[in-house]
Image (cartoon, rainbow, N blue to C red):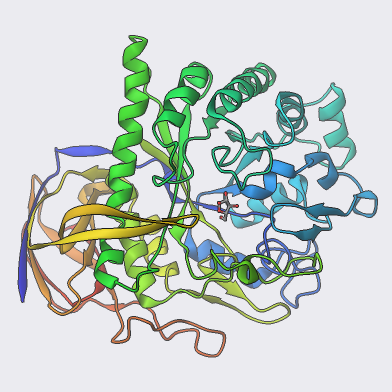
Length: 514
Ligand code: AHR
């Protein structure tokens, strides 16, 4: 058995979680929209075509804000194609996913769906094939009350009230050669700055995220941020970053260590943003939008998993089936995001339904929770509040991590990785939530935690997620093979807590003031 000691103090905090830290992502990709959130012929669909079973699972998952409509898709998207009478909307070839886009679901349908799902909308604009004018027109269409061509068009389409979209992404992954309209940092910087200016002239209250690097392994990482920030520092509020964890090497210990590179990535982007501020003697602090993160590798590299021939509508692509092991790595990523709540104000689990998603559906059939559903739903429900600094003494292991880039094979040192990864969040009325990952695959870890400056605490929720088979999955026929169970061995004596974590387990404890 391993032992770990943790010290927290209610007065020593990292920062307050922004509600938008618990976001997700809906892209016109595979069966995420069509056959996912929208399926008019489904038995549970409402009069708008929104699947009721999916809506119920989305509410249980608990995302707060949803990014839309892409992703790679947005870089070739004409938003005007997706508004107005459905029968007049054009059918287009989507060059991001080599499928046919019927455009029967567009911006207004998405706004209605967000209302039904009780989430805030986040829109990305196309800075791949388009630029500032199309972007500012969309802001006018969505946010201007009326009395102008674009806002009156929205009203004529049946949405009298503005959609009031607060958060906008200035394009998507513009540093990647796979992107439609891929640009150099300098070219993107100019387009993003000018789009930002125009969008904000239409609605000065919106917040804007410039594209940072689409991965820490990008060769341009660092230089990209320097140049883009030099152009957009005054006009954007956020710089984005994306990460997809992988276990290509089939090395579980390294895979579970890999979320620690998200910590490094966040701290590096903060350093880059603050260096730009320093050069300008500016007190402005750019915030981070981690607007794509997840585990994704099985359906990532093979063309057959990414593209179905013949330009189909809503092909079953990127339908990653998540294992217990993936849920552990994913839980590590949740802890990384929480522990940087001071600067990561927005984060989006990519994605929501069917395509690399916590929720799976069968077209015409049922819907179920993948393994990664559970750490996210617990984080969203219990992770709101003031994230506390944790002082952790834990045994550790040396790890490096494999991350492919194109045909190159790269290995990144992760360094010394503590077996225990933990985040602590002080909530309302003296409550405390603990999120704990035991990365030891064989041994239990006994965690002794001292919660200074708290009153007497009692356990109000204690859950663990584990399975004897790290490759266990949830499927249509066995949708509950992996699910949370009660975390049994918790002892609490005032402010001192002892909890036994099983090997390879994700654990969540919620404590209230007694
Ligand atoms: O989420 C899937 C894809 O991953 C997104 O479209 C793109 O932005 C990223 O490369």
